[in-house]
Amino acid sequence: MKDFRFNLQTAAYFGRNCIEKNTELFKTYGSKAVVFTGPHLSGRLSEGRHQSVIDAENALKKEGIPYLLVDEVEIDPPVETCARTAKQVRPFGANLLIGVGGGSSLDTAKAVGVLLDAPEDADPYEVLYRKVTPYENIKTQCKLNVICVPTTAGTASELSPYAVMTRADIHTKLAIFPWVYCVAAFLDPRYVETAPDMILHTGVFDALAHGVESYLHNNHNRMNRLFAEFGFSLFKDFKDGMASGNLSEEDYDKIMLHSAVQGMAFSSTNSSTTLPHGMGYPLSHIKHVNHGLSCAVFLGEYIRGFKDQSLVKPIVEQCGFANSDEFADYCNDFINRHIDIQVTEAELQQWTDDFMATGRMPSNPEQLTRDELYQLYKISLARYIK
Image (tube, rainbow, N blue to C red):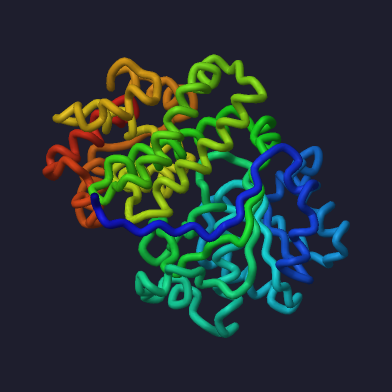
């Protein structure tokens, strides 16, 4: 049996009204808090506060914890924005940071926590992308306690140690190098029940890609495959309801749990993501396609294109499909619903070269040549080529 590392440091509370049932937990982690969220969830740019924000604020009020609400989180948060936010909240002197929202809110809370640990005049790029040894990252690299309340079911940032930022210096997205584990996460399926279809779907495909890619990763092991397989069984149960738009309360519970277990599949052991995630970064960074849908663009054709279909057969069948064609067609159905972009031949060539330079290919069980990778880009994006 392979050697592997297994590492989870977050207390996960799953269930409806889980914050309300556990408000005392908040005061065990801090006496002064900052809540990070977006302007739509806070109600500043929408008709009302999202239930997740209401629940978090009510918990802080009930436990007598003063807090500051920062509702300017950006999608795919830039390093520069997180640096400005850290400067804004530093005088408040919080010892508890709470991210409420999608992955961007959770990642902002983590990055700000790392920046607050550093001197105020430190270069944010040097702080967030300093060289960190694997053994340093066995424990969280943030001294402040971070609690995450996800309102989407895909990124699993609440359980993984990663925080992805947009880097202006190299024009791409990249996880910060210091790992940040949340002390607690509240997984309430009610928060995804009200999500627009596109937000729900992009989350599900992000989570599915976490499971598929970590299952196939050359560093896969018994532990991470155990989580991934459980995630596939959950996906099988709700996939038809998601396709038809007819989801039950139990389906939403499974969607939230699917995100969590696939997050553990790709982040708690030596395994991680492979081709679809790396190939999707240009779509989200340059074409502004939501991250999970950027992964979905390549996920189906990635599975369909395996030369040795025995490698992907267990995934396909556990997800409830007869073969990889059915799997790919399912992915493509949602892509057609939500994505309307144009790409050029020059972009395909550039993205192929950029991916080949990332060093991700060795993690893949089938090594692709540059031309084979280009063909995967071209087939996946055929409907959008200008």
